[in-house]
Image (tube, rainbow over all chains, first blue to last red):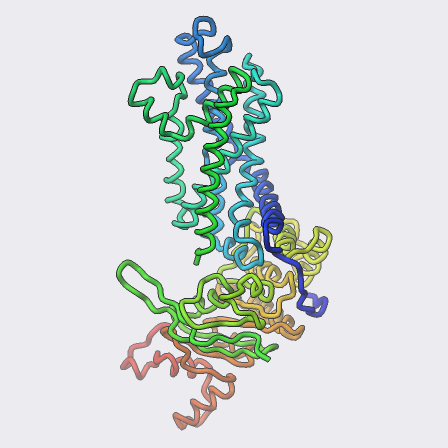
Length: 273
Length: 263
């Protein structure tokens, strides 16, 4: 080993406090999480493959029941256009950030990060920022693939961007709640198990037909389910163009759940022992 | 001047209806520039004490200052003063050694060029330049421990906490870590070291404390502790630190009527 510079006990501006410090720290940690995702493409693959698989299977099974012509809710498009938002939301609901986080907790690296003077919020936001970026990339690829099969986004490029941003924000919310479970339980098995919540969240929705065509019990369940409004907002952008009311509801759900998730995260990460 | 002070440090854990007092009123005063050893059997309260002093765990009672900063009132400030290498080197296996050090430096506020330069210095310091751009999952136990040590030094902390830094290492790697700890200390960093290896404490520490069942039961220089035992028991020869430890923790062969207890 080589002896180097004498210790100067540096006084660094490290871990600046306040919102700017939290954002800077989150971007630094998020950059690492993105690098991690690039190095583990096998973990990214299911987030695209499984939703596309469901899309192909669902369209294959139901397209003849719901032909473009004669199915008003398709607005002249094929059934794949109606199904695409459900696939995008499925892709956003894998909670990958939480699985990486719990691994980090179990292996001790989370404590290493906690011992640095960074914003506690950055410990949560760093991975969520990466989740936003990953979902943006995966969602974009999925929509581009869908275009090849005759689906188009009625609201145009701006609508496409709005839709991807909304879905990516939803990915942050979902992963954020999964991270809460990871931090609370510190168990990979419990976190993995909890991620199964995406089943009721995604399937108690109007994912096959519009809400007003569901049976009454399913309609009630879908109306209570917040994911319904994100799905309907995304669907409106694909099928109808800009529907202010639908978009307002979709973004309101994302905003409210984001605030709740962040509030709980701050509380939990600050009391983490 | 004190680098670490603790007064009446306490921590109680709840497990169902049961309460376990892991730390029961620990007082510490570690002078600046010391290598201070903190010894004790498994479950004695060593790691819990370290976790409280390093802001990783809230104080159950009492108060503690590190580098003059109150760890409970200003944990953020305390984190700038300390470097931490915990038991079982916690490292991200998907990053390279260089990336881990650069990230750590960035988290302490360095710019990208500063962080890269500091990472290079530290890789040289712990002799990991050849493996710098390999992912950590391929490192040996000794390499991981050295990288962990380096990552605790990115901001040149006033106080370095090492929680069992050589557990699980082969003898050669252990000696390498000892050499590095000495060198870091010579550069002016106070070192607070927990260990189960008494030889390690004897080799490295200016002073040490022995904790058992959450309380400090001996404190002093290794030489003074040995002398005290020799005088008290009227021994003909100098006892070893093992003898001091066994006497202090009550884990003596005579005390358990011939039954040899594992420590």
